[in-house]
Image (tube, rainbow over all chains, first blue to last red; front, side, top):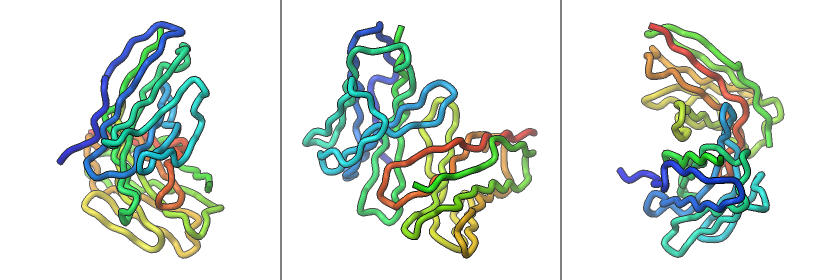
Length: 114
Length: 109
């Protein structure tokens, strides 16, 4: 079965650079979530989209922005990168109309900021 | 959002049953209880979800008492591959996931 695809899997950037993370949800899923997991930390919700509209916002820095496109893939744009942005970034997708809000997570993008 | 409390860590041996209890004293009427499993450097994976009483699937069972202020995830006959972090989450069915501090389960041979 198709899973959530994230690219790139690994990314190394310098401070103050920008980064773009991509997420391709499971086909027919209408909701995409982004989570950040720092080293030794628990996943933290950043932002979500339902049918290409932002549906919720968590602890996402103003330096970050995200959007969902017409083909349902989503991109997380990160600017003025800081050392503290080094983390695993997970994208998850779900079908909002499903019986249980089972979120399917991708393999993550490991971002390292030097 | 209801806050959850679960043990920081648990140890077990292969073949044993593991029960992880989660407290959620201020759970709301519309809240569901969901458990996720996470292996190192992998995304969390849905295990089971319930609203009340008992739910069972091919992986685990979830026991929820009548007052719903706690829940217990039961993993029958664990194996080494069950070593992971287990998260208990409480919230409405269509909401973002708010992860607390999960339970690190270590299974020994």
